[in-house]
Image (tube, rainbow, N blue to C red):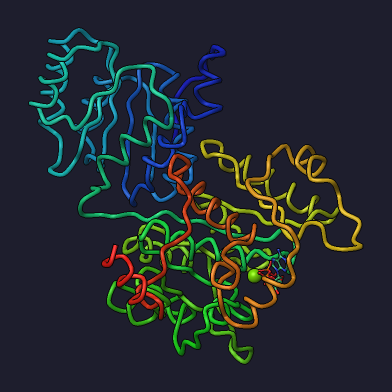
Length: 437
Ligand SMILES: Nc1ncnc2c1ncn2[C@@H]1O[C@H](COP(=O)(O)OP(=O)(O)OP(=O)(O)O)[C@@H](O)[C@H]1O
Ligand SMILES: [Mg+2]
């Protein structure tokens, strides 16, 4: 990012705005969707807005966009575009009185290329000015002070049309150590999500050599995610449909090949391209990451909308979870904290770190603590079933329902057991009983 901005003294309020992205709640975070590969040029009057834009430019949602920040406000923009072509989006800060501001905009319009959008930032909360600006083709007007999250949300609103461009949420599941149950949790939560919300969910199994998604859903797919990763540029909705394996009306898996005589040439870019296509067609994409640290698994974690870390209560898990949490906190300043699940707790005869101590050391409260339950989990794994199907009354089944609600911010919804699916053998009987009543 090129930044001609001069440094300036910032107040504690500015720090607060930057530190927390000006977020008021989780909803604001989810309204700001990833922004496409566009060029954005800003002309600020005040160093604060320049800092806000710089902060936003470093966010994962703007990682594809090219942002450059200049000082000098509207007049600098007018001078600049007399010589240069205009980008996709121009952000202009102006504290000029209404008539002068509009006159500057009229000048700018003379050199604006078709398709360029203008976002104004001003001081006046004035509806007449707002209408005048819209009449002149300005896309949006924000009143200072603007937070990075507000800026991202506004840009996202200009470039993501909720009707034509559905953008699904990506949930990345990773284990703090191998074998802690991250995949099992990913699959059960995805299943609960699809049943409770009656919404489409795709599980992307990125554990290409050893993934268990096929096994856990009793499927043996011939094609899957490795075919998409090999030629990501060919992936479109039609091909995606062919490569997915349907497990229920709402749940599909993008299965791992699980063969060892094949080399997997995965790059951060191919992962991103594939997940971008998937998120265009379904509202919820859960990614089952292997417990290995590669440039592409790191990229998936940093780019995900939510990260769910599963750990067992021992020292190595604590250390690894801390490292992952610290990395995420420093690289995702405008995002909510990762979610923590402590799994396989109270294993007979095993010395464990008490949950409170584990949480205190991580500075993070676990969203769920799941007991070691060898009977339910063992049976589910061997039968290719979900815990809900094996033992719907178990604490683990309840935990998966709650996690599904919490990660989709549906805390207010009553968590009910999923209704028996249409495929249930007892469904006709239930229907008859209901009719008699
Ligand atoms: N709460 C639990 N109680 C008992 N067994 C469990 C529990 N959670 C998971 N398991 C079992 O632990 C084993 C490992 O689970 P899983 O494969 O999901 O872990 P993982 O973290 O994805 O491992 P990997 O590092 O291989 O990807 C499985 O056999 C699973 O059934
Ligand atoms: Mg796994």
